[in-house]
Image: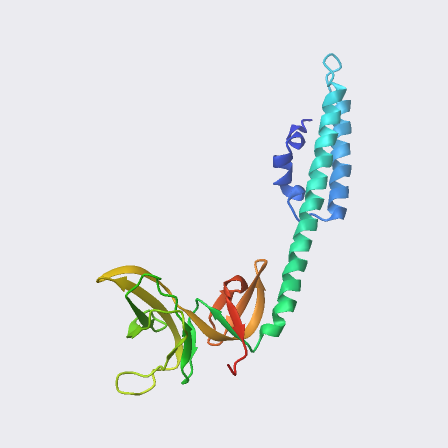
Length: 223
């Protein structure tokens, strides 16, 4: 009986019961199976050409290494989940506050606060507004500064635009040439904190989702 496959840690770790996520009970069962296979191999070896004892030692050491690696992976997975849950719990207090991030903002009839960041050497800065389908619905010039500006949400006739998500982009130019074009940070109300794929995700009013690492400022809604 050939148990050479067990001498390759990579193969053992990616097949059957050796896949990451195995429990301690499964590892113990696998080790018993391994010993039975090793015993059968010893009993059926060629007496004229016996397997060197060092080969058995290597196989035992290999299995032990795989076992330790599986247990380490399980431990790291548990720690990652714990850290993600801890981070989400800490950010639960953010719900109800306004986060500043490069995300789509929900227009519910009230002006939306924008935090543009034009190029330092720009001579002119314009903000482009697009609706949820990506269609440009507004474009206006803004001061070449990082001071917050308000988007009223009104159309050319003075009527409010449809409620929903809008994205903003700033175009910096000088001498008629475009220097830079980048998303504009907006303030959006946090409605939910989620843990997705080991990352803390914030859900903003209107359904926009951003990573917690994208938030550059936090404030009370009254500001």
